[in-house]
Length: 198
Image 1 (cartoon, rainbow, N blue to C red):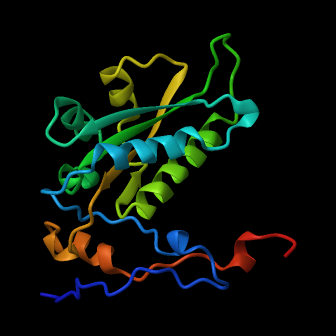
Image 2: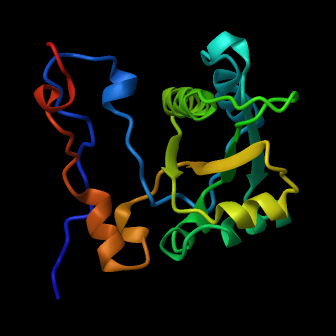
């Protein structure tokens, strides 16, 4: 049996140049404190940050389905996550389904909707982190199950689910593989690999 150091002394990104602390320190845990709640003020602030995110032509092509732990809506969202996410998400304080309005009211496709929703979800995550909370965003979802569960027509596309809460020690996670992922070194591709013309 392999012993894993689950103390994770720091999760601050090693950047090539200084960036805002709130960005360098943001990371996506899977271990959440099942006894900690998110205050109404902090949840509202995170959603306000999403609301004020940039959007093309100010269309704001997004919707957020928000549920607190212990509610039927939370359980419904959790049932529509992929199995590997269902292992750890029940301890999050809040689950949020991030939905893009891909077709407007007149029937016109909004090709930028997914991009704009991503910006809004990022703003939510940064505000939450600034308030001492943590966020883990998941693409491992059952989109059609969420669409059916919440009565979303073809105009609306469930894209991701955000888990929000208070981080807990990695040792609290239920299996060794998930604990190992929690404390693995943070890595990103170098700028030279993702930027053209720098």
